[in-house]
Image (cartoon, rainbow, N blue to C red; front, side):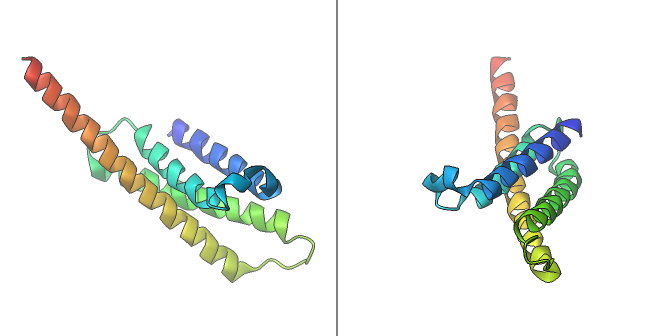
Length: 128
C-alpha cells in the first residue's frame, strides 16, 4: 500500500506541475492531464503483489478516487483563487472524470499483469 501512496503523491505533484507551468508541456497538446491518471492507474496495479484480479480492485478504486479528488481540490485552490469562487459541482465532476480515467488505466494494468502471470506460468510449465 505504501507504493500506491507514493504513486498517488507523485501523480498529484506532477499534475500540479502541469497546471502551474503549462507552457513546458505544449508538445502533448493538453493530453497530459488524461495520460497522467491513466498511467497512474496502470502503475497502481503493477506495483501490487497480488495474483487475483478481485484483490486489485479495492485498492485501485480507493486510490484513484483519493488521488483525483485531492488533485482537483488543489487545482481549484491554485487556479480559481483569484475569483474567490470554489466551483463545487464542476470540481466534483472533474474529479469523477479523472478517477474514471485512473480506474480504466488500472483495468489495463490488470490485463498487463494477468498476461505476464500467464506467460510466467507457461514458461515455468514448459521448463519442466
